[in-house]
Image (cartoon, rainbow, N blue to C red):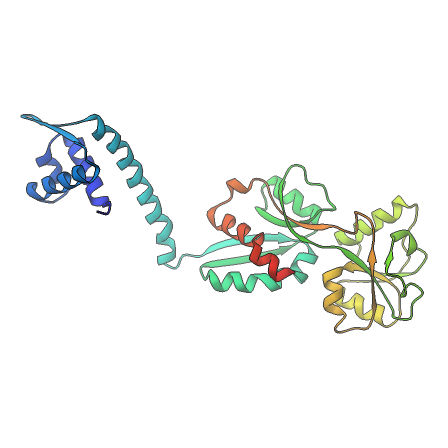
Length: 301
């Protein structure tokens, strides 16, 4: 016999009124029907839920335990109905994901179409920002969920590993560095660079590393995105540093050499970050679980 929410409500109506007759009236069924339903409940669990007397009915100890669980189940049923109502009415959930330029250009275009097709009531708003700005927005509550570079410390946040995001050097095919399999940043600093605009967090991290080596990077040109940089490098203007995934994508369009960069700063990761994942809404938690799922890792790899 399946458990019926109507029977739970009937049982509680009888408890509230102290009478089988009044409980049946409140439930809008006949006394006979109410009696049969309570009898079936008692038979199902092999207990007596009420003791009958001339003034009405009184719960047994088993009935008291049943009442506690009945109230909890009815409350959960109401919460479930409320949660599902939005979907049946076509209500949309809006998710705002803050992400750095690497995540936005190289990772999310592969992943978001699948998620949006499978979840037609979800809308995703991407906000591109620098990793340090995303960290500040998450910490202040301005943002709820973000993808950041592991290069920037974020001890005030909870983070989950999303993907490896290493950096590589790209150079013209006939460049002095082209024959190398791997290089340190120090090996490259005597050559002119093509870089991103000054406000990009990637460029800031590269320049920070150069200063630690007591060097300043010489830029021949600064450009707004990786595609423009790859084209200029392929034409022989200079060398550049960019995410490996971007270099692999752009190598199909432009002829340049990719060289591995060594060092912890270059072998960075993308992290999914939030102030507290457990306090996110159901929609945000569902999306977060998707981003770190094994299915997503298979797509990225």
